[in-house]
Each structure stands twice: as structure tokens, then as C-alpha cells.
Length: 340
Ligand code: NAD
Ligand code: DAU
Image 1 (spheres, rainbow, N blue to C red):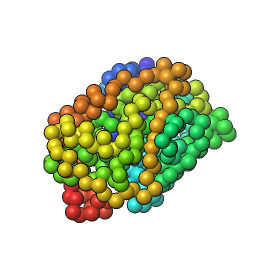
Image 2: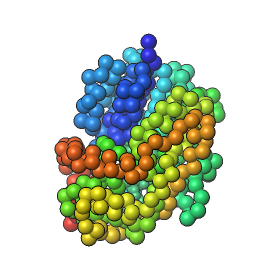
Image 3: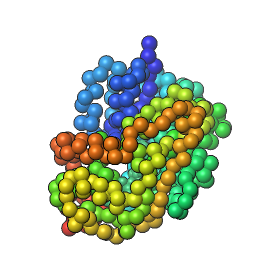
Image 4: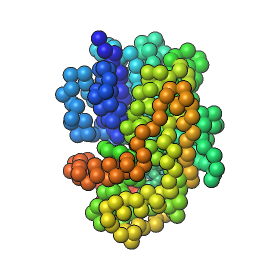
């Protein structure tokens, strides 16, 4: 009988792509526990919702009873935790929910692992826990954690909790730290889907500050395959950086989108910078490549074109997830003048 993986946050962007990968390319059964916050959408999982190896449970990772029921009913052998509050700008507006889910939620998930009821725990973390880089160098797994905003501080706290549980209780856990993802089903508050959506409608594109901040972009499928490699072959207690060596300035990403959609540069609007904005991220992925044999397969050019095509062909997906809450967030973040 195939093993069962408990995937948390599987109705979100990366978790959903991971659930699809497990169902389409492995034998695992999948139980997806998701609280369906503004960022979680079952519409994104319509193609696999009736899959015989898939179960959805509407629940919060902070709720120990929900997790215990899942353990009792489905006996998963591992947990891969994607559930999180993930948007930096929202964490700057208010961080309470970030601490609740990203810290206390992880603490709640660790309890059954510590109790010996789960063979392996994978905590999906982020390159942001390392803070901001100057013009040179890359983050390695030994770079000291130096988070620069409430979101990344909450993710770093979770990393420390996992590390402490490995050290104290000897649990089998790994941490993955990936760079910026792009691809299908990403919530349109994040740079790439936001800019594609707005450019397609001829709306202005709000670029923070001078637009010369650098992010290291990876296609979500490459990230998911890396997490699967860690789940199956990662060494107990280890951290794995994941990145695809695609360092690009924000302004260049935005211009790529405008060119692909045949829209003018005049749509770009430089707006007030994000407070505490990290200048540059860049990942060294030597460890995961050497030790687990994982390598990125999607080039930025190819992945971006496919992504732009996906959003253009799935405009109804964005329309279906744009809620009143999104419009209120957008107005708080960008001012009413920008509109959605
Ligand atoms: P997302 O915001 O698209 O999805 C998050 C999901 O978690 C949603 O489905 C939401 O409903 C669910 N969720 C939130 N709080 C929950 C709770 N308390 N209980 C259960 N479910 C809850 O996020 P994403 O971009 O897919 O990111 C997934 C993970 O990957 C996060 O842990 C994030 O920190 C990490 N990560 C993201 C990126 C990126 O570029 N997006 C890069 C590196 C790491
Ligand atoms: O690096 C990994 C992280 O990437 C993940 O851990 C986070 O969950 C994910 O949200 C992402 O964080 P960023 O802050 O880097 O992503 P975001 O898409 O919000 O912004 C990317 C860059 O674009 C950043 O430098 C800010 C800038 N930006 C963003 C938005 C939304 C703009 O210039 N204008 C915008 O409107």
C-alpha cells in the first residue's frame, strides 16, 4: 500500500502544485489540510479533487484536534508543511496572523512528530530568513539567519523551532529554503501575477522604490521537485537551499511581462518603497544538487512565457479569487487610485 503524505497549505500556490506533483508522478496518497484563508482556493485543485488517492480536510494547522483526527483516520507517514501567511506587505500591515500560523502552527505540527507518530517532517521555509545581500555573494545553508521583515522573522522562528526539536527530541525533520517562485495559481498579490493581471488590463504597474531590487526566480515545478527530493532523500536534521540561479532586477521582470504582452513601458509607475525592503536575494544550491541530485529544469525565459500564457488563458481563475477582501487589501497597500 502506498504511503500517505499530510500536505498542509495545499490549497495555496506552491502546496497545490506539490499536491498535483505527488498525485500525478508518485504513488503517495495525499491528505491536504488547509484553512482556506484568502490565499487558499479549492478552485485551483479542481482537476485533482476526485483523485482516488486525494483527500481534502478543511482545517487550521494551529488546531491540534484537527491534526490528531487526520493522524487517526489517515495515518500519514510524513508531513510537508506549506501552510503559512506568506505576503511580506501584509506582514508589514500587521503581523499577528503571521505569528499565529507561521510560528504557533509549526509548533502544533511538531507535537505529533515529537510524540513519534510521524516518520519525517519537512518544513518549507524561505531564503528570506537569511535577510538581504549586498551586490556580491550568495546564501548558503550556513549563512546566519538575519530576517528583515515580520514575515521572514516568523519563518525564521519556525526554522529555529524545527532545529530545536531535532536537537532536543531527535525527530527526523528537514528544512527547505527556496527563493522566489513563479508559475500557475499564484495569488495576484505577488509581483509576477499582479503585474501580468494589471498589464493585461492596461493598468499601471506599481514598482516599489527604484525597481532595482534583485530576486532569484525559480519555477514552482522545480521547487516542488526539490521538496519531493528532500522528503524522500534528505538527511535528518539538514537544511537545503533551493534556487535556480536566475537573479533578476524587479524592473527587468516587469519589462519582460510588458514586452510579452505587447504593452508600453509607460504603464510602469514607481511608487513608495516597501519599508525595510530587502535589496537582493541569491541562493547557492550546491548542497541539494550534490547530495540529492536535484537540478532546476525550467529556464526563466521558458518558464515566464509559459506563466504569462497560463494567466492569459486562465483569466477567469483570477476573477474567481478576487474577493472584497482582496480589493480592501489592495486599497490599503496601493491607495484607491490604483484600483484592481
Ligand atoms: P500561499 O499564500 O499561496 O498559500 C498558503 C496556503 O496556506 C493557503 O492555501 C492558505 O489557506 C494556507 N494556510 C494559511 N494559514 C493556514 C493555517 N493556519 N492552517 C492551514 N492552512 C493555512 O503561499 P505559497 O506562496 O504557496 O507558499 C507556501 C510555502 O512556501 C510558505 O510556507 C512560504 O513561506 C514558502 N515559500 C514561498 C515562496 C514563494 O515564492 N511563494 C518561496 C519560498 C518559500
Ligand atoms: O524569496 C522568497 C519569498 O518570495 C517568499 O518567502 C514569500 O512568501 C514570497 O511572497 C516572496 O517574497 P517577496 O517579497 O520577494 O515577493 P513579492 O512578490 O511580494 O515581491 C517581489 C519583489 O517585487 C520585491 O522586491 C517587492 C517587489 N514588488 C512587489 C509588489 C507586490 C514591487 O515592486 N511591487 C509590487 O506591487
